[in-house]
Image (cartoon, rainbow, N blue to C red; front, side):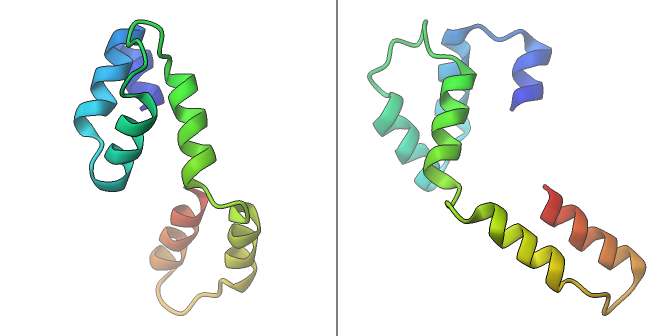
Length: 90
């Protein structure tokens, strides 16, 4: 969404309404609970993104990624191995 908001030069009011319409399930509930009463004209993507990461990324996220990297070994094609590393990196 960083790129979307950068390309469209989205103003704060749109930054509120866009996630409010595309988020689904738990993320939608979280967003509406945390930002439902916030004035859309002052809400920035940086604020929403920081809150999202704080709530949804586990505290041991980096450790888990390092463990996945350390335990990785090629069992199929090079393409599958590369795809696995790309998924971890994202």
